[in-house]
Length: 138
Image 1: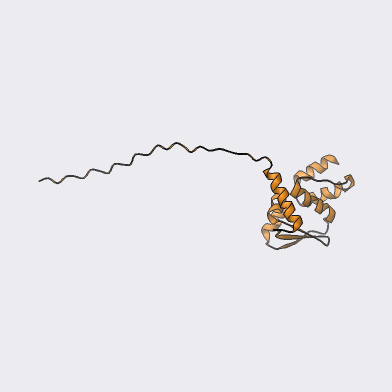
Image 2: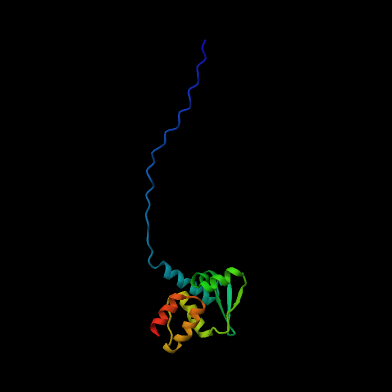
């Protein structure tokens, strides 16, 4: 009696699943709402993970926000994980505070005669878009 030869396995036929449908939903106010919330947290001292010392004034902020807004802060924070950063003494406190508000709001409101100080600080922080805008006004 002859033993049957086993048949080679038949590969499973691929099931034909249609590609899943995807949708994209835009939330136009998301970024501004997120920044407003982060600014509120900053002003209330919530979730802040760095103190900035500028001309004897201490301001609280979020490292991730600073690093995203300024190459100067990005590099400074990347090099060390200190909870406190002392800014160079040439940085004027009022101008820095105005730029910090800009970082969190996207708006810079100041007297025209304060523009040169803000330009100098923005340059030091490597905030080139701000430097360009301020330079155009001057």
